[in-house]
Length: 306
Image (cartoon, rainbow, N blue to C red; front, side, top):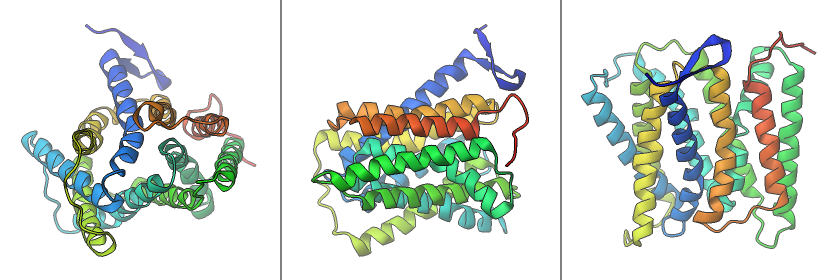
């Protein structure tokens, strides 16, 4: 019997789930500099189309073998399209354009402002309560964006438009998250995710064909390794681990994993693509982690609205 640990709300977390969360955090964190590495030899839209296509096919095959119903029916296709546009096509397209322009660690930091935009959109659109935690998170994110924008504007090779791409990506993901919460789904989440990936990859192949030159497909060995990582790890094993645990994890545990991803992305970039974070990056990571904690970690007492 494996040791078990008490989570938030009295739920119990097994050692297997802890190791799964660690693996998931590392997989998704390391994916940011791996994407940056891949863009040295492949244009962003073709990279995204290639890795997403093979990742979706791998997931389809895996869940088909597991006996999951893999074909949407009737109105379920509408859910696939409407939820797939912001959650997959919007997020993944805009994010890879941001990674192209920015250091991968900075892209990860900005991308994971998503939870804060989610709660802010909930306040603005759905009249949810504006709490002190949300205000704190907004200020932390504003400081994050200000730090990285100032650095990009003052750097010789600074590309502040990458910040715009990443924040648009985070907003797209946030809007999709709110839509997902309010959707009345009748198909398995695994099926929804796989078909969102499939349809988004078709769109990406079309976008790439129109906007980018056809690749030579003559890549170095490490480049092929990074493509395999993107397809099998980022879109494959990481998704499988997440689906296997997401329904059973306490909110606080999920939040801690999400908080750590931009930190892992920033630190691993020093080894994978030789990006040395400056003090602005490290402060920005702490700001984003604090903001995520403010909006995702459960409070011990009811939140005070303003």
